[in-house]
Amino acid sequence: MSLAEQMDTVTDASAGTVDRHETTETFESTNPASGAVVGVFPVHDADAVDETVERARAAAETWAALGFDGRRQRLTAYRGYLARRINELADLVHRENGKPHADAILEITLTIDHLAWAATHARRVLGQRRVRAGMLAANHAAYLEYQPLGVVGVIGPWNYPVFTPMGSIAYALAAGNAVVFKPSEYTPAVGAWLAAAWRAAVPDVEDAFQVVTGFGPTGAALCRAGVGKLAFTGSAPTGRKVMAACAETLTPVLMELGGKDAMIVDDDADVVAAADAAVWGAMSNAGQTCIGIERVYATSAVYDRFVAEVTEQVRRLRPGSDDEATYGPMTMASQGGIVRRHIEEAETGGGRVVRGEADPSLFPNENYLVPAVLLDLPEDAAAIREETFGPTLAITKVRDAEEALERVNASSYGLAGAVFSRSKTKAMDLARRMRSGMTSVNSVLTFASVPALPFGGVGESGFGRIHGEDGLKEFTRAKAITRQRVALPVNLMSFSRPPRRPMRWPG
Ligand code: NAD
Image (cartoon, rainbow, N blue to C red):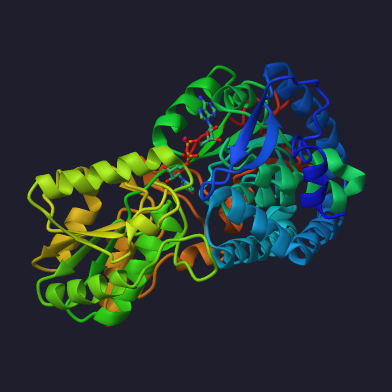
């Protein structure tokens, strides 16, 4: 029986959550395209979360004791399981999040690649190594290793319900931790599926990866449950609450927050390629991408051509729920309200709005939004300053790339961004000076698909890193050990040191 069928047999409730807590309160997750119920899940309270973390604590010891090889074997089994069931999981993502099936396949494929990288490289990055002891400790051997933290709590969003949380989960597991994951209340079925898949693929340490479901209070309970670290991905306002809750127990946090990412299109850019990338970066996943392109600063030399190309491409986009649709509905109905407000304010605030040609009367419900290009807004417009998280793209004309960079960097957010230029030297210089954790040159979002590269932001976009070597180390603590190899005739770190040999620096 497929996991999806197993979920159906229990009215979708708790298939992945193993509800051992007799939780009575439940909630539904619904398909944003149709309103149909996708699953019914328990609202786990603080006691249930504590019990889950306790079980994970015991599993963490077994998991850590397996060592790098034992863990790599099991992570490979999990990866294989996901790969074999990719269509089933993509269908669930499509139903619960709303994105096209093909986009869900891409999201899961990227996740599988990251799982492989984390499992393969954990020993090299974290395993014990010798470091130079230096002159004063020349008679000692010095060792460095990165040890797991125990249980890592992961709280995730709904927009990439597989790729985003697995960016923490895969790296935390590969580093030797157990994980308790609280998925978004909008995508609990996907979270539960991921945990059920773990139990099926890694039955001998099944409690190393568990899921709890619910709303904000369930997440807050996870913050207070005594986990070794809390990895949060979501909005900046919620991030502040998570940090405050974690502060009570001095639980360290990783913050992957929102963004207002921008693209610079310079004088010498390939304008057609830049427009293509900007439209994909802005509109795919209905614009609900933390590293999506929300703003473009195009130099006056290319502005008119760029706008013409973008508006032409946007005309052809068609939101929908079928296989041919370019993007799906807003996953969270309330986000649609924010997007509409940003577009209305752009219109009333003196900007120009060019809409796509999709016919709203054909949309099944109001969760589908027509794409909109917002032209020449003042820099204090909501669509320039605040995260819109919808199928919009604000384009502003600037004198040159330096003015573009100044405006890009004026944002309180600093997650990612892009530069389009044919000059490698200039593009690399702009990329390095962009105030963001990641920048792609002559493409968008590419850094997320390179497992060796760290992922994370600056400013309101958060701190800490998932992915790559930094992402593995994020879920560990450095452990330093020295071992005396030979005793010296005079031990300087002892009261037995001869009194007439005071330690004095020469000079
Ligand atoms: P959100 O902040 O509303 O919720 C995120 C998670 O936090 C959910 O699981 C929610 O139940 C939980 N939560 C809510 N209140 C809580 C509390 N008081 N204590 C603990 N947990 C609590 O975000 P969202 O709407 O699910 O996701 C969209 C946001 O996520 C956007 O801002 C987007 O940019 C951001 N995001 C960032 C990244 C990144 O890597 N930087 C990736 C994806 C999404």
